[in-house]
Image 1 (cartoon, helix red, strand yellow):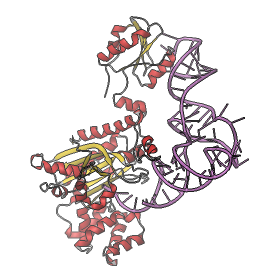
Image 2 (cartoon, protein in one colour):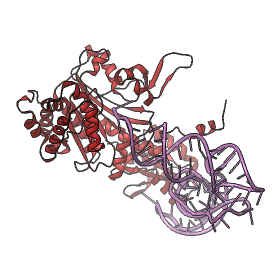
Image 3 (spheres, helix red, strand yellow):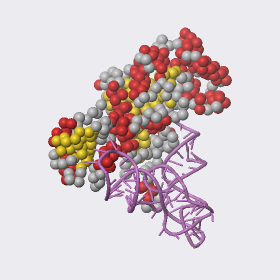
Amino acid sequence: MATPNDKTHVFQAPKGTRDFYPLELARRRWIEDKWRQTSIRHGFDEIDGPTFEHLDLYTVKSGDGIVSELFSFTREGGDKRYALRPEFTPTLARMAAARANSLPKPTKWFSICPYFRAENPQRGRLREFLQWNVDVIGDDSPEADGECIACCIGFLESLGLTPNDVTIKINNRVDMETILTASKFPEELIEPMLVLLDRRLKITKEQFAEESRKIGATDDHINRIERIHKLTGRSNFLDVLRDTVGDKYPETRPLETTVDFLTKNGLWEWCETDIDTVRGLAYYTGTVFEVHETTGSERAIAGGGRYDKLIELFNGPPTPAVGFAMGDVVLSLVLQDKGLMPTDEQIAQDLGLRPDVYVIPTTETEHLVKTLVAQLRREGLHARHTYKSTRNVGKLLKEANNAHARFALILESDTICTIKDLDSGEQEENVATDKAVARIAPPTTE
RNA sequence: GCGAUUGUAGCUCAGUUGGUUAGAGCACCAGGUUGUGAUCCUGGGGGUCGGGGGGUCGAGUCCCCUCAGUCGCCCCA
């Protein structure tokens, strides 16, 4: 059974996966921490679901075509088909549907978990990645849309990104439908046209016209689309909307209300309306938005929108919902591009990973080290000591420094030590070792 | 699913038209000097050259297959 090639599977990580050594894992934890802190600050509660689901959960929404994009499997000897989760929304919809009657309105949930997709890896895309999901369930107001976007902006800002670095491109499918209807598009043409609009900038004008004809659009329709695009290039999308639609602009003014919410909260400088942001997914029903790096050199950092019919699809009561997802892969690339990934020392500081004290022995005191470290640990301190055999103080201080320790404790004798603050370089000699804990300030995790 | 390109130590890389026992820097371990994050000196471990096959007197080097990385196409929840 074993072929020679099986050997390579043993020694290499599967395609599109990552090994996280301590430094890489610290960077990942740092991002997760920022996601979590931001979500909590914005009033969201953390949830999680199973890492794998019944395969049907994904085909219900996306059709059988999705299966080739999934890692799906059956238990040996079993019939049921499962799939590693490729996204969170179906799980969220299932969970929301199951408790629909007891959930407060709105319900605000976030999650941070790994996802799996059987695609070929390339820049910004892996087969296993982390995603942050943020959703507001049971609130159909455009303010809820704005609240999601605000949370997203709050995160970007906490990383040191500015509106010069990233842009939130916002659109609304209801408004788009209004425009298309006013442009004399028949109802059955609207949905395919929206999907096509999402690809408009990625294909040539001729291809766009050809694809449009394929779905049944006339030259008149295509010309109208072109005219709308020319207008949006020069002026505010909302003005164009009013000009194009006139009196037929709906009372609810969905896009305008979301824009107002963000403007009132001082967040509009991060955003722009964008007629080409439609998102390929059919299930979006209202607001849609994407976060892009401003030069467009990377894939979308995040994307989301309103999906008011989805929870019904999972046998819940009619429940409006809006949310977005952000992956760690593109985000990390953008942070690196911008030089905003903090140093390892800063990360250790932010995550509370810095040792409080690094114990350095001399030849005479080395037999005391492990006992002292054990005592310090019992006191609640993060204490480390060298495992090297050298007693060269310079080398050991360097080791303490590489570990990002806050203090070095040089054990001079049975009872006396020197305590050196490795951040300031100041040191205090002739300290009674049993008083050392008091000299070392409690850990500052903030 | 398709295409381009790459693969030599943990990392970054050298390795001549195919020719002894495959190298360097950094990192790691150890020893020494100066008791303070430094500098310097010495030594060491670590490679089946991604894997398999072919051909050759002889392959890290040439040929085929395969795995993986990178980039792109398709797709992108």
